[in-house]
Length: 183
Image (cartoon, rainbow, N blue to C red; front, side, top):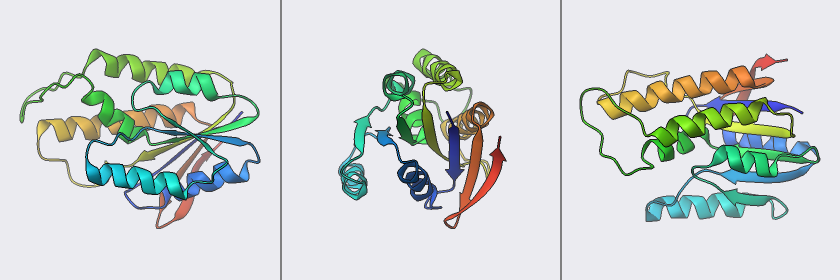
């Protein structure tokens, strides 16, 4: 059982690299998509991604209950590919419809904390191979606004926690993977 985190910046090639890992596994691929079509542009993006994946891959759309989806689909004969953790994070941050202040402390929904803990607990289980894709959002300037800063902070914390739980961690830039951890 191998747990792999693939992360990098926007349009870095991280999803293509993760998909290559899944395809090369020789196993049945389950693709867990965390994106939600909140507008026409995102719906078109999701449709484009869906059309690009091999027809033999099963797609499971799960914007919130990621740990439960992983528990349901991970098995020794499968490779589960999750794309992506930062979309999932954003879905959780706004899952209860709250409006965040422009300045000041951000209080995240209880479901955010529950789902994050459940994901890390699920990754500790030896059910089958998984590749998780995430964005690196902390390599630029500190974002303007409380909610953006909170998102960047939580994305960084999530990436660190998932990297600790994973056996392999690859940072992708310009389509080239740099293996940071290969235990």
